[in-house]
Amino acid sequence: MDGAKSMVNLLLTALLLIAAAPSIDASWPSKSKSTSEATTRGPSSAVFPLYGDVYPHGMYYVTMTIGDPPRPYFLDVDTGSDLTWLQCDAPCVRCSKVPHPLYRPTKQKLVPCENPICSALRHCETTQCDYEVEYHDQGSSLGVLVSDAFALKLANSSTVRPSLAFGCGYDQQFANPNSPVPTDGLLGLGSGKVSILSQLKEQGVTRNVVGHCLSSRGNGFLFFGDDFVPYGKINWAPLSRSYRNYYSPGPATVYFAGKSFGVKQMDIVFDSGSSYTYFTQQPYQALVSAVKSDVSSKLKEASDDPSLPLCWKGQKPFKSISDAKKHFKPVLLSFINGKKVTLEIPPENYLIVTKYGNVCLGILNGSEVGLKNFNVIGDITLQDLMVVYDNESGQIGWIKASCDRFSSNADKSGMGFGFDEGLCQNAYPEMGILTEERPLFM
Image (tube, rainbow, N blue to C red; front, side, top):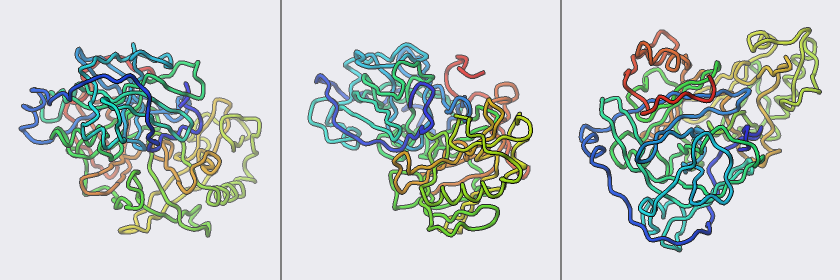
């Protein structure tokens, strides 16, 4: 969570502590009239373009339009945590330089301590709902919970502005605190009560389903609701009850080039807030040994490339993943839950080509960054897949998809998602956020 989003870059569900802030009386705002009228039609869906990439930017982010009057904010998309927050002028004790003016709350926007959403976040001892969240990359945000309007356009042609609770962060810590950050905050898309998804469900705006499609070419799309989910085509796995705070399809056996490593089954978590994929010590070392042995006669290690821990150079610099992937074999995860669903990880979903022309392994050692028993499937492995987190049915699923179809064509033709096997669904041309602001990465 530093300015460029550090290599660790893991945004898993946060540790909740008590934050110190001046006490202010506040009342909980009621549902807006526009939201009440729109949701009488029943839950709908909303689609948003995503911007960014795995390398070199190290994140995917979305623009959300918040407040009255509505203003745009860039939010890092994180399925590994629940709380959404913005850097905030409350006033700000410690904030970074962000793309937009800091969000400024009013007393009327503060979430009161007795509100159920505050109780779900932490034990409240003052009249307002203070919070602190800490992440595995040593970043943190401290502030107070507020509620404000999120402007959304839905697939049912309605426009809604539900009042949603989120964090007003007035004290942030980053690895490089003096560097500007490319986003204004974080969009927490976990399954907890404080998550934006749960709040939209409770207000009848969308069903408690979220999905994303991260393009390996950069950008992609994000959606709330289930109107666009091709249920019959997706590989589904039940969400593990052992990891209720995370999106986990349960334990899996890992294979490389069709052969098992012979290590114990790995506990897997999907996390869009992590740029890279992380294995714990034993499977990581087994993978590194297998990959090194497989490419030793074709490539030389590039120990002088600082991009990632393990890199190789070819006879001439690699220009793209297409040049490099022919030297590597796929990794496969076989999940034991349900129907023994598999996730194939082709070389392009675990490698990057750096600015130095080398190819690097994008699966890292999670034990070195304190992940303990977690094996995290991050953005690099989730590229060119439509991944659906279905909290309604308690399942997670994925399907190969052309994730750049939405971002490149939706505004011009209204065409949306391009799936493998000839499946192509029309997207609604009026869907998305109420902003036309240009993104950072173009």
